[in-house]
Image (tube, rainbow, N blue to C red; front, side, top):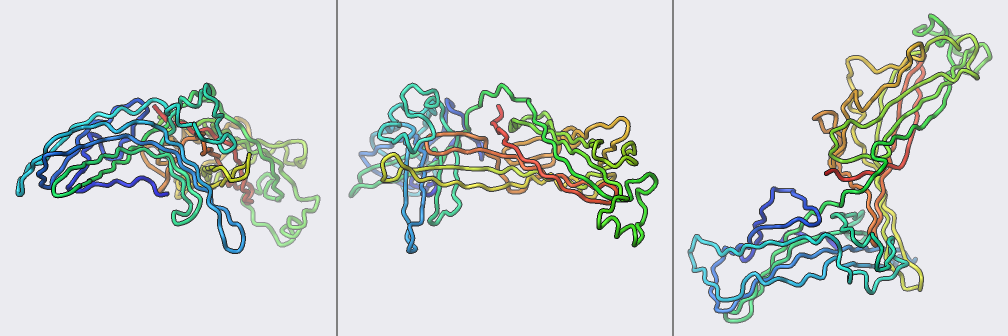
Length: 411
């Protein structure tokens, strides 16, 4: 179940009027030409062109004894019939430096064909298959998930232009060309576009360096023993780390991510002698990963049953690079005027489909961010996973935060 591959030859090839890597939206028009370079002489030829779109899932399950069972599902998104671009004689002589060209225009439908839901089973669909459900008016974007191309579970949403040249000359001849089309997912309505979520963690630090004037002091052997065993004479600082993160990320948005970090003391359990002593927290590094989770399914032979597969991978956005060799580290003081660090503004953090950027610098290497979507046999969601490393009084602590995040396409 391989993704549509481009196919062309001097017999028949596409010349599409779009830059390399261009993507289309539902309702767009694809324009271009079909071209033949090889000589041909025939009194009877026909050239047809069709836009195809399909959703496929393949779930492989072990059934013991080193055997496997394979479950499949496929939705044909369009019921388009091939359009005839040309019918008649062709003549391109040997040695000619000319080509034969046939212009075309193809409109991408704004929604799947109503008939595509026929002969499918509700149990294996994430969407209701009832005729009037609004999800049937949404054309899913191109997508591919294949943890093991050779034999493993896979799923995809793919679109392609497919052209065929048939002619007679001493027999029947058939030439074919394929041009994969990248279709963007629809813009999601998102009323909470700029809402954020604050997650709070708590921790403690036990050290004599928390005392006034002891911040950079070398601990004696005896002090180290007391610190190790946590004797009552060693002060304890309890604190909160609060990370505010976006609920929604729009790819291509020029506004910095609304991400901020705040550290505040937890006074009640903190040792009395240091309750009013300001403490300085150094931010060593911050990591951000986007965990992308794809669930897909196919009907099984059992009635009211299906088989599914969940594939999850974590993409490191490269945010930690910004904390390497900083001229002056970021710090937060719990003293008067305690303020959060606005990380999105400080580093001008934005997201595109290629990953995270700081200003004009792309931090993510080899990444691809896919907006969340749900279609008939595929459901894709995203999670944000943060790690924050801090140092206070010479003690290092790492705090972890995670939350679902809705990633949507930009305009």
